[in-house]
Length: 114
Image 1 (cartoon, helix red, strand yellow):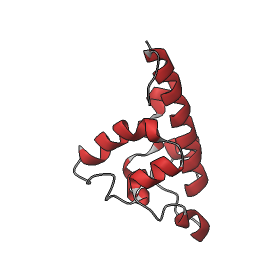
Image 2: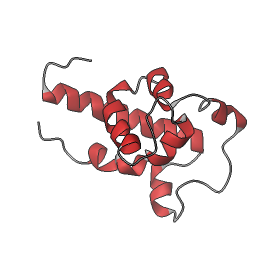
Image 3: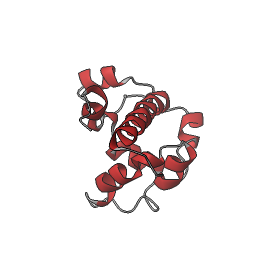
Image 4: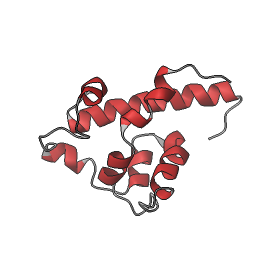
């Protein structure tokens, strides 16, 4: 991806993070606001088989299938940098565990400074 300015990049990244948070909420059945009030990382109930099936791929394949490629460098740092492994080998479920929406909240709710 090539962007004409830092502002364009920031706008596209913020939009992708918003979609990622919505996808996470859809798959795990919990809104970000509810998660931030909960003492647990995930809901007590298991995601449905249909939702788990959407995660049956590598993390990098999930990012690309859902048009989250712009987030790949950030999520790669969370995964590779913390020793979980490369996105090509980490499962999408594992990636979404370590790349929880609350980690992106400051990027979405704070103003960008180009």
